[in-house]
Amino acid sequence: MRELGYGVAIKSLRVVAVPANTPVSHIQVLTQALEAATTDPRFVDITVNRIRQPVFFRQGDELRAIIQREADEFARLQANVNTR
Image (tube, rainbow, N blue to C red; front, side, top):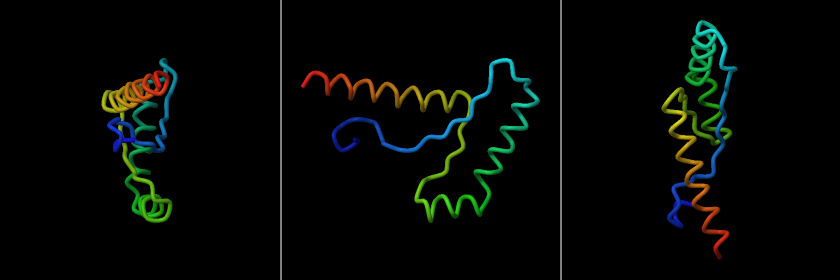
């Protein structure tokens, strides 16, 4: 969609979320495990070279910003589709 002027890229985004009351220690363990998985050379090789999907590990405010930006761009795209 970028070639049409929209800042939207159709891609797969995998997000892991936990309940608000999850203990910080559990979040830290999960975060470390997910980060380790996304940097494992075998995982990266298969995901990037065979499945042909990029691998990015994002969390917290950085992830929220990515999701918000995509949502805003999809809303702008939808508004333009509905006016045609």
